[in-house]
Image (cartoon, rainbow, N blue to C red):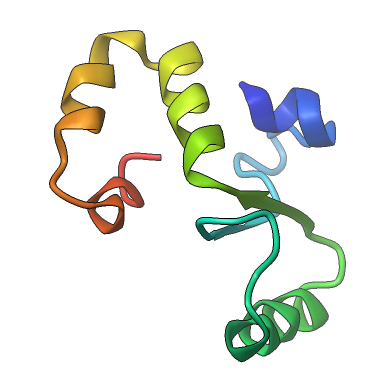
Length: 86
């Protein structure tokens, strides 16, 4: 999975989930008007890694990790619909 390679975060038997906060926006930088929301989550969860995704990165992730689902993923009407599958 890209997350574990990119952030060296992995689940284990003792903790069957990863501590990663994901943000998604069209550009590599979250706009000022939304940035405080992401920063609040990060401040409350200081031990979590942060992974910010752009639409091209999400598309590449879907292509690499779920090639059998890619046509469905790309077939969604808007980017908003792609959040849940990823």
